[in-house]
Amino acid sequence: MAPAASARTYPLRVFDAAVVEVRDLSPHFRRLTFAGPALATFGVPGPTVDLRIKLLLPTPGHPLTTLGSSGGQLQEGWYQEWLRRDQPGRGFIRSYTVRALRDTPQGRVLDVDFVIHPVEPGQHAPASEWAQAAVPGTPVVLIGPDLTALTPETPSSEAGIRWDPQGAAHVLLAGDETAVPAISSILENLPPGMDGHAFLEVPETYDACTVTTASSVRVTWLPRKESGAGLGQLLNEAVRALTAGLPLDAGAETYAWVAAEASVVREIRRHLVQAVGLDPKRSEFRGYWSLGKAGSGANGTPIVPAS
Image (cartoon, rainbow, N blue to C red; front, side):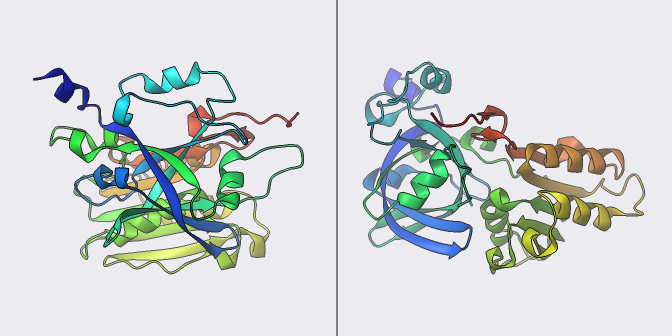
């Protein structure tokens, strides 16, 4: 194989794009639509379901240092290379889910839904602040799967997809607001023969949206504000109520996909595995973020007051 072809076997690359549309969906959700010629080769062969991408965001007032080789190609170890760079040129990396990937007469466009949350005085939330300030024309740098680099042998997890129901006919979807885009995309791609439950915890009632699905999965929205519940409380209670009184092996034929704040996910996972008998190897548990930390999941760093 020629060196150039070998270099393209790494599934991820850098894509330069720009915001072409901004839409406020609810008090806490804003949808940004990205477009650009580079996105012609962005994506995966099948449905995007819970496809995760990374946004490389600039430190305000400073340009980003170029990442990857010519044409945006990345290699194994690119993230460690990025971490070794100095600020302010390094910028920030945040993970998001593709809400939709659409082909239009003008080219391929990418929808990403952002959770807009309040920021404590003296602190920064780079992604939320960037999304609030974005307007059509704002440039963006994406890191995601390159269709030309994917082969039938490429594991879907390496391309950014963790959804793998492994033939299960019953599913349990549970997530907080950070997982709403992924769960919504999953629901839209479920086949008619699938049943189960989807629980989505959101800040308030107005954050609930209409999600279409050909499946028989029952969708329940859990707004915190109206109930006075704490973060993750309603999600945990809903899962426990659903599984109350079930025998230990009740989870044998169920595929669970759970994503939320890390400690909430740990608690739900412990219950489903120990009390319900769910096989953790046949399910997906993702800490999308950690309370008191900035960033994504395990890569989060403790929040410190801004200087």
